Amino acid sequence: MPRIKLRKSKEEKEIERKIRARKAKAILQNYINNLERLQRRIYEHGKEAAKLGDEKLLRRQAAKYLALENRMKQARKLLLLMEEAEVQKELVRISSSFITFSKDIIDSIAEGPDVEKIAKTHVEFEKAMAKAEGIEEALSVVMDAASESILTSGEFNEEKVDEIVKLIEGEVGIEEFDFDKKLRDVEELMKK
Image (cartoon, rainbow, N blue to C red; front, side, top):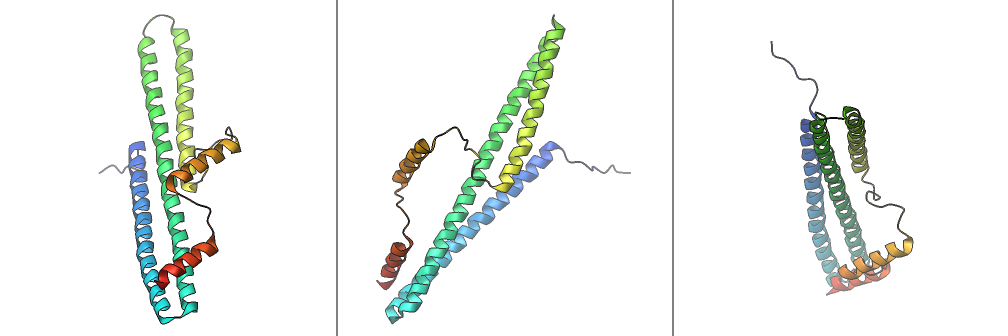
């Protein structure tokens, strides 16, 4: 009679989690691609409305165009958060590997004298291993929640954070978002 395996190993669970994460990223990227195609179609519809002189239809198309742009931005942000969570997960894995290595070293040293001192150190490493596993579980919860505060902490003052934000925005050329101006710009582009 074949033996049925009821519990999955940590490796199997990790493989399944990676597959789910990869599928989620692929679905999200496909969603972004579809939104981009739809946005191009709406832009063309706006151009047609401008050629026909239908200002009301042109404004509706411009508003749809901007709404899709906002959805794409949110989807890209979620994709970035997923990547960020993966980096954190990898950091925990690396730390766990180091702790395992340290435990093996302690075990090999335990064969020598002063076993009592080494046993205490071994208990400390066991505690550290348990803590690393707890961190890994907490990180999975954080990843599921897709929280924006994955890597942030309260130790930075707002002024320094604002400086870095401005530096990053300067790098990518982000300006303050003025919805009405953006709407007018899209309408003007569609009229051409």
